[in-house]
Length: 150
Length: 150
Length: 150
Image 1: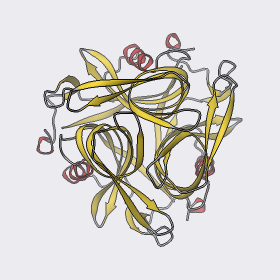
Image 2: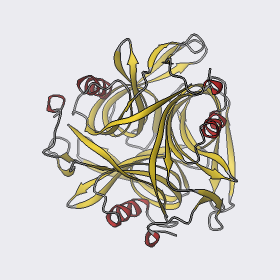
Image 3: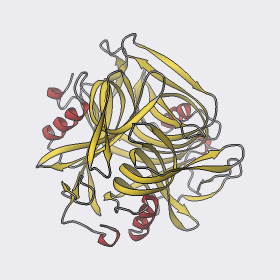
Image 4: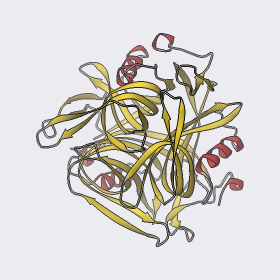
């Protein structure tokens, strides 16, 4: 399923110290009236919670990382879920020994984080429950390449 | 070697469940007549094959991951190789314990994957064998900063 | 703190074999008169140095990786520090067994690396010492959403 989008406003963000990085992104999107976006982020977190989705049981297991982590990389997008901008972010985090953990970034308490976020316009992506995966995935009337898609 | 490009069409893609993510990207590029692009992706794979390039022997070793993986991050580009759009993707994958493996993403069976792909126009990047590394690297007549380059 | 930026020139770069990837990016920015940018990179390094920031002691510890690494992912930005373009890059690196290390990419000797760099214009981001974190973070007069910010 493909959604052609236009590139809208672009922002460099310095996430608020001690905020939750996912909440920060959701609030920024709401404040800036952004419904769809793509972003990357680097920085450091005081603590974090990662999720791993069980593809058979259709449920997340969570891993709490209670010590400081570098955000070695974070990639994500924003789209609408239940009419609100919903950040979907995955990340690889690193402890003081350089050891890495990764997955769905559910929470992350910001030490310092730099985000490049680009608004995408022209398509309305809405997350709805997908029965095959159990996940909230993009749906839309605008599907320009249905031959390639589910 | 630097190639100045223009930003073309931009897409959010929901990769087809059970497809191979690399094939999906190659088919999307072919279908959409995209020869050059940059992309990021997150999601989950049912299985994957990663490659690591031996810099001395000039050959890939492969690692098959036969259990479900989160795509903690995936970054890549598309350019022409043997006249066809060729996706070059690297990824960090995570198992149910949050443990990470990474490298060149050779194959990945999609559970669910979200891709932000941006077409790049105005430069024709063609992969050709590079004798120094043994890899297929970009070549072009358009080299705007040769002083910095090989 | 948010900085609205405009998307400027975009480049695909093949980093110079045997160069230091951070120096390569700084030199490219200087040569191309780029003061602000966002980039992603993939490829392989002959060796690398990663940093992890101690959030209490306010100092970096360093880890030298003296054997070849895949750049499983690299995300970064360029902004001005002491009046010069300063690349800030984080990366996840992978050895021949697929094992990963990550953090702040301080040095990396290029085997082969492909970078997508996009210039960002219209805002002047300058790194200055931040007393709370001890890091050099973005400051600017242009702060369009101060309610969300430090």
